[in-house]
Each structure stands twice: as structure tokens, then as C-alpha cells.
Image (tube, rainbow, N blue to C red; front, side, top):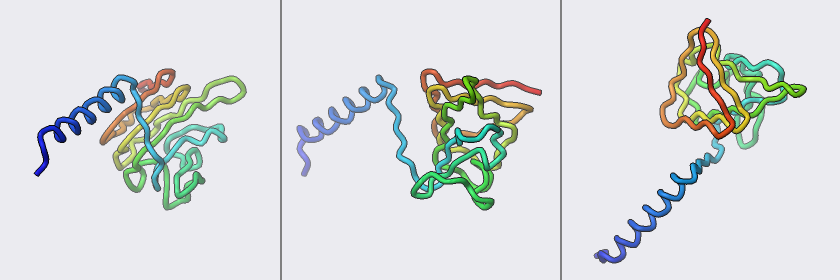
Length: 141
């Protein structure tokens, strides 16, 4: 039988750690197979172009045709928008389509930027994290 003192200690430890991580805004995602991140080595930034992304398969690599772009063929765990600068000019990832599958976690890193064109929608099934210094903007047309 578990004593009340032990249960209180576990509850206190969990509550303390939860409040510390909530207060600091600490969110960490370990890369898992199928995660995507924006590829900062390319100039184009359209969401719908798989060549603008990297996929994690034990290491970061270019997605092949069966991987597609994030949300094209399956729900990725985490999609990370990274800072993307070309000769002193920031470039935004442009959500130009509505992916058929939801994104589980969307992270916009410090300096990262996600914009929309047209009238796309992104379904985020779990969490949206926009770091201090990251940005998202929703436009039309």
C-alpha cells in the first residue's frame, strides 16, 4: 500500500516541475522520425514544395516524393519553422496550401516567420508554439 506521505511528495514534485516549466515557457521536442523543419539553405519558401523542407529519419535529410511536404501524406509529429535569412533579408515560410493532414505540433523559432497566401488553413492537433522573436501572419489574396 502506498502511504499518503509518498503520494503527497509525488504530487508536490509534479506540481512544482509543471509550474516551473509553465512559468519559463520551456517547451522541448526531441526529434522523432517524420518531423519536419524548414530548410534554410534554399531561397524559395512555399509550404507546398517538399524541397523547402528537411525531414528527420535518424538525421535531417531532404524529403523524397513519398515523404512530401508536412501534412501532405500523413500527420507529422512536429513541424519547426526556423530563422531563414538571405543576404540580410528575412524570408518567411509561406503557407500557400491547406495540407490534407493535421500538424501535431507547430513551432515557430526565434527569427522564424510563417505567413499565408490565398486562403489556406493549417490544422494543429496539439500545440502551437511561437517563440519570442518568431512571428505568424495571416493574410489573404
